[in-house]
Structures are given as structure tokens and as C-alpha cells.
Length: 43
Image (tube, rainbow, N blue to C red; front, side, top):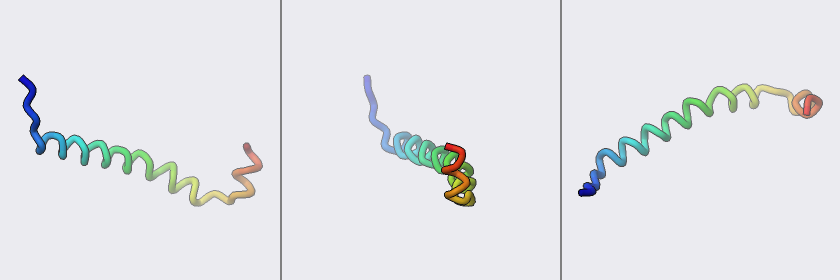
């Protein structure tokens, strides 16, 4: 039988959100430090 456990669902939600923030932070920080003209030159 299917049992809905809100605690497990909340844990999975916050875990996946934390993984997204952790792995999105470094590329976003690197991109924020780039000069837009230099970044567009390499496109």
C-alpha cells in the first residue's frame, strides 16, 4: 500500500533545493565576475 509521509517529502524537497543551490553557486559567481564585453567576445 502507498503511504504518504510528509516528513520524507519535505526532507527530499529541501535536500534537492540545497543540491541545486550548491551546484548553481559556483558557476553563477564565476559568471558574475566576468566582464560582459569579454564574455560576449568568446561567444
